[in-house]
Image (cartoon, rainbow, N blue to C red; front, side, top):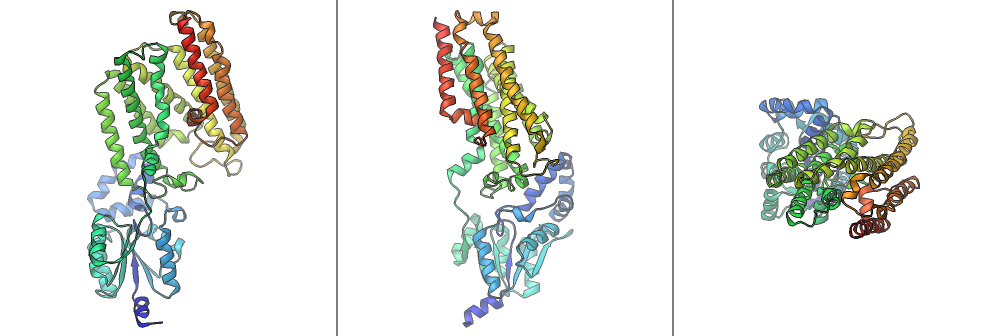
Length: 479
């Protein structure tokens, strides 16, 4: 071994955890895990924080269990550490995370000979971390791997710095000192689109249902108001999706596809997501100020229900699917509220049954792919594998109920005020059944693994049926 290599091996390498070893921050994650378990902890968090971040982290860690095996590790940097350990270098984990979290990560990786962490009195970050390492190994007696502004003080006390996925401050330090560097994976526009769940905005076109069926959508004022309503629903939905994804991090990381979501994979930080969510809600409020007051009430109700769904309702048997069906109905109500149209019993009844069927098929797909044993609940839900048959029966029954409501509407006196020849619309009944029952058959065959509403919006057969239905409505109007 040459002298330079020997010198490197003889110098211990201290490694930061949050943002460096993993592409996330355990404090933010543990806060949301705590709130997910009990939202009332929200009132205790500021009290703990008043005693310092060390107290805050310690109290949270006492109540939250960390699964270190599913964290988003920076694999290229971990591979480097493994190679250094094979060469005989001493690796030390030095983190501002609480003791249980630090030990869980160290136990999972099996790389570190010593662990230093935040305790009840000292938050082991920045100057505190630099002072500890200098005391243990002497100034310039260690190398240090970090990632952000808080690590600059440690870099300055270390012999060499290794900068991993740096923020702007650490990036400037690295460029100035030509330190070793590991960059984060590139985050493209698709990742941000995925964060916002833009594809889910398709559901918000339901706000157009009322104006379209009332034949007022072509009026400029109605069209503008409905478009603004759709944007408001889209922004508020994305804001809640962000919060929901942050709350669901532990579960998403155990899922074969959801683990690739922006927050679960660590591609986007939790503080960034929270900032975007807040801005979306501000934009939603601004749009609501341009529309009737009753629309703002609908949006507030939508936000309350979706938040309750994220925190608790989605883990409750049947309450979850009824809630989802109700949220679709709220979109229809939102379209009415934005345009001051009268409430239609038929449209709401049809929407509830139709979307209840789609919500049930979503749970059916989860049960079809579940790997838990009989008697155990699937992760994050109130369902067990043996529930699959009753879920399917209920979903198919809801599909037929939606078709029945449509049939009764076509025969009702209400329709004659809009269509002189309502019999022309009758083919819609089997067409609606075709769309819904086909989805159930595909789900039964394990050929459906996407959100059923998004599937309808992207499936050419469903699109053809929807286009044919529109032609029938137009024909009934002009005949």
